[in-house]
Amino acid sequence: PNAVLKNISFLGIDQDEGAIESARKHLASARGDITFHQDSILKFVLRKNKSTVLGNRDLIYMMGLIDYFSVNSAHRIIKGLWESVKPGGTFLFSNAHPKNPTRVWMEYVGQWVLNYKDEKDMFDIIKGLDDVKDVDYLMDDYQVYQYMVMQKK
Image 1 (tube, helix red, strand yellow):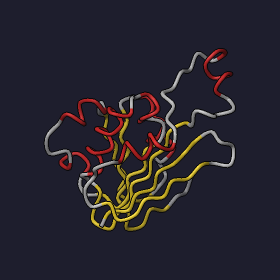
Image 2 (cartoon, one colour):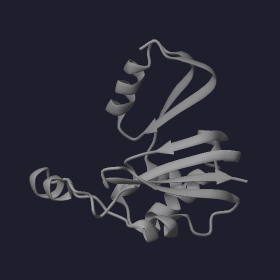
Image 3 (cartoon, helix red, strand yellow):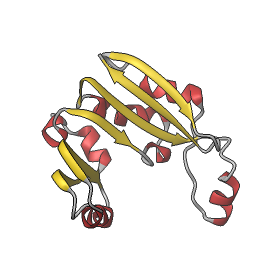
Image 4 (cartoon, one colour):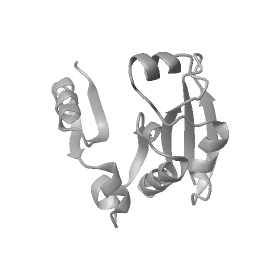
C-alpha cells in the first residue's frame, strides 16, 4: 500500500473501467507518476501514432490479453505495442499453454474458454518484428502460463 515509484512513469491501460478504478484505488497511496488510460485494444491496434497514447516505454508488461485472440490477431496486437518499446527496452507477455492442467475445469465448470497457444505459436506471434535483440521463452512451474520476454535493440 505504501509503494514508492521513484523516477518511474507508470501507465495502466485496460478497456474495463472497473479494472482501472480498482487499480487506481489500490495505488492511491503510491507516490510517483501514475496514470491510467481506458481504451479498446482493437481500436488501439488500428490507430495510427500509437505512441501518442503510450509514449516510449522501457517496459511493456501484458498479461491475460492475447489468450482471447488468434495467433494472427495476437501478432497485430504485439506488433502495435512493440512500436512503443524504447531501444534497449523490454516487452513481456503471456498466454495460457494448451497443456494447462486446469483447462478442463476452466472450460467446463467455469465456462472460461481461452485461445491456447503452444511454443511455436508464441514464436509465430513475434515473427517479423523489427529490432528484436533477444527473446526468452519461459514456462511456469505448473505448465499453465508461458511467457515471452523480448529485448529491443
